[in-house]
Amino acid sequence: MTLMENELMILLFCREPCLHTPMYFLLSHLSFMDIMHISNIVPKVITDFLSGSRDISFTGCGTQLFLCLMVLCGECLLLAAISCDRCVDICHPLYYPVLISERVSLHLVVGCWLVYGSFIFTYMRPQTYHTPCQDKFLAIFYTIVMPTLNPVIYSFWSKDVLTAMKNLLRGSFLYKK
Figure 1 (cartoon, rainbow, N blue to C red):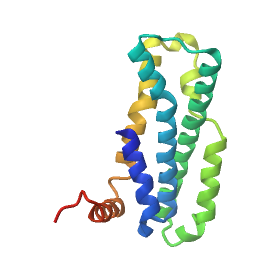
Figure 2: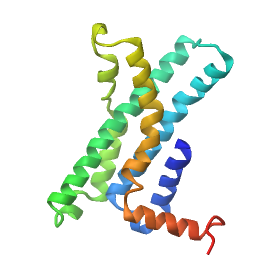
Figure 3: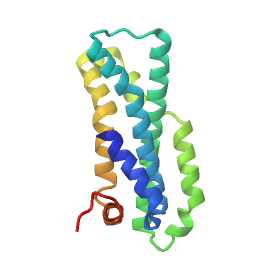
C-alpha cells in the first residue's frame, strides 16, 4: 500500500503540469525517499517473520543501517525544506517565485540527499534513556507508519493533487461515467 501511494504521488507530480512547482518537486522526493526506506527495511522484516529466523550478517546489518540512516536523515532535512518553502509562500507570496525557484528547490533536494540528521534521536541517546520496546516502536514507526502517512499528510489534502488524480482516473480504465 505504501509503495502504491508514493508511486502514485510521483506519477501525479510528473504527469500533471499544474503540479510542476517547487513544493511538489520537494514532495516527489519525499515520496521517493519513502519508497527507498520501505524497500530497505520491509523485505528483511517479512523474510524474518515468515522464516522464523532473526539472523542478519554483519555486512547486511551495516548496509541496512547505513541506508536507513541516510534516507531518514535526508527525509528530515527535506521536511525542513518543505517547511521553509511553505513559510516563504505564506509570508512572502510576491517574492516566492524569486526566492524559491526551481534551482533553489534542486539545491534543497540535493542537500537533503547528502546530509545526516534524525538518527541522533534513535541511536545517540544514552542507553539508560531507552528500552528495547522503545527501539522496536521507533523502528516500526520510522519504517512503516511514516512512509505510509506521508502521502496522505503532505499531498492528498491539496486541491491540485486531487484534481490531478481525477484527471489520471479519467484517462484510465478505473474511471466510469
